[in-house]
Image (cartoon, rainbow, N blue to C red; front, top):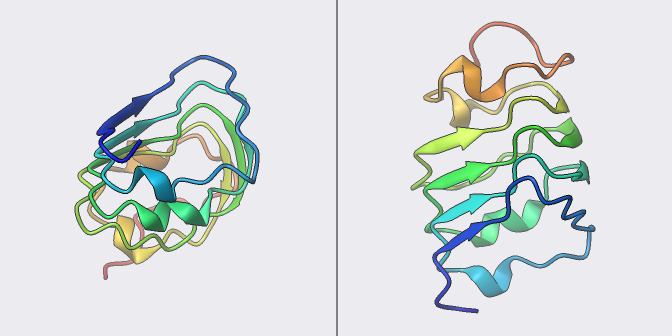
Amino acid sequence: MERKTTFCWKNSSLGIGKNWHLSSLSRLYRLDLSFNLLSGQILLSLNHLPHLLTLCLNSNNLSGPIPVLPLPNLQDLNLSSNSLTGPIPPSFSSFPPASLSTNPTLPTGSPPPH
């Protein structure tokens, strides 16, 4: 799977568990798992995707804090419509507020600058 550059499994009730490993997808540029039944915290293994440009995890049942994800190439982020908690990591300060909207327990306002 090393050559895979896009993984879009939208609205499929994928139900990925905590043991799902992303390290084999290190050349991935776009990850869209929106509108699934994902629950729990955002996987820290996203840190193993250094080429990631797009991350869409919106409209799931994700909860807990948003992890600090060192994704230097990330250009498009959508974590909206989950149950994520704050604080919002400074690395997400360049994304529009809509990318984190409808997370009822996130602090309102802009994330702190980095």
